[in-house]
Length: 331
Image (tube, rainbow, N blue to C red; front, top):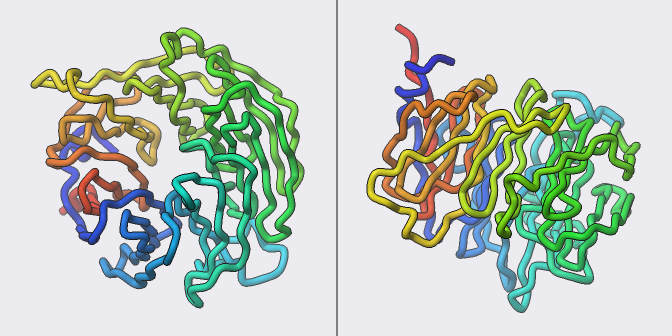
């Protein structure tokens, strides 16, 4: 992907929801969203079509994650799978203390993972093989669950009620923030998890003044980590040493720093050469990986989550739109 092609990203498909979109997940060509009307929507991007809509009653839902249903027993690394199930978190009495395992096709609950305390925002991470998830609680616990077995693998005591977690792209490493100023890296192979970290990175230079870490994303080559903080700062760290390599500054024109801060969840491009993020000025901001500003694309609404569908960028805005962009086709 070149600077020219990324500047020419243009609309591929757009889907409007009744409520504001609250979460998004992507698996192959399938996109799932939740919204503030408690509706799950499933889209097929190849067909540019909404495939399924279902309203969840009595609870407020968020954090949707699509699951792989493998066609053969024990084929957890196979590409031969269907998408029939999902996970989502749920608010009841204004507290997010449950994760539902849900059958999308038959529209019924398979299991409810219930926790003694509230789930920390952006701490719910699903393994790439979709058989295990990590979540942290405001009671300062990091929990690792096997989905099909409904079993708790680890309960790790931490010092951070705002702990977040993330897997690398191959799913052999998970990262989490045990306290405000540290990132731990731990290994995981299949169901074999290690709760002892093999690397720890001091990030106090970027988290001072309560500027807590809100998001971690690994590059596709797994050599870099993208870290976002509460006050809209974005950095690339060396994933082996934790060294701070680059920072990404928003090129605002009309002083939106006076607006209430707006947490964005940036992401590397699918070739790891670019960084994309929403801002608080209604634009999609794009840098090269070294921190050089390339361009911004006017969206008219603040961009929240960004995902990749092959070479297309899928993202949701603070309005009720799911937008799919793609690079121009070569003649």
